[in-house]
Image 1: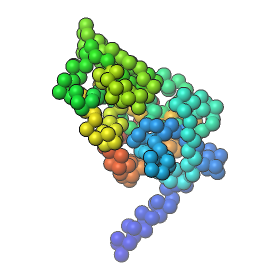
Image 2: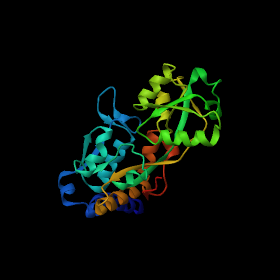
Image 3: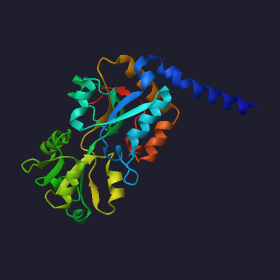
Image 4: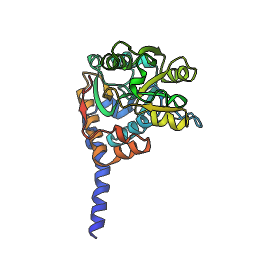
Length: 272
């Protein structure tokens, strides 16, 4: 009898969670759903399943879980990376949830609910692992990374601190896929990606790459909201905190091999 009472209480809590958390949502979102911008080219955060072409990834699962917690439908809107901030400003969508790094410069036009920790990490072709066995071995070498991220700045800072008169030669790429292509072609000696992506990539291309050293900086990945959307942000923060509290967040981390990237407490604009 006692167990039945606990089960009943849990069911009632689940039913009431959505309406309670959505109380602060704008009426339009309650009626039409939460529009989320996504750029599906950054596995395991968001990408198209090769077998079905359906949208999948950690961010997609997290967005759907947030929608369930809030009791609203999720409307995914695919776009290009350079249209994310303009689209948020012109209200083409309500939020951005697409592996975006929370940075001080981006905080000028968006407020971030930070939901993941990550950091840039060097990696090399497995065939050169013995030669480039630690990060110091990359001094004076060509290292590629997406020019649209903070990686160039962070690589330069690490190089200035660690390489002295033989700095890293940075090569800007059009994204992580381009960096890996250049690495395979021997045009660069190493590449840099967020440590949250490397386990997935290494699973997809077995024995191709080897991580080198540890993270060279700490970053926060954030869900971007309009600066003025205080009510929406409060509802989303409460929903994320609920997912952390009930273990749903931890389950998603494990599913996408992101256990090392999880947070314990939600922060706002913690990025630097």
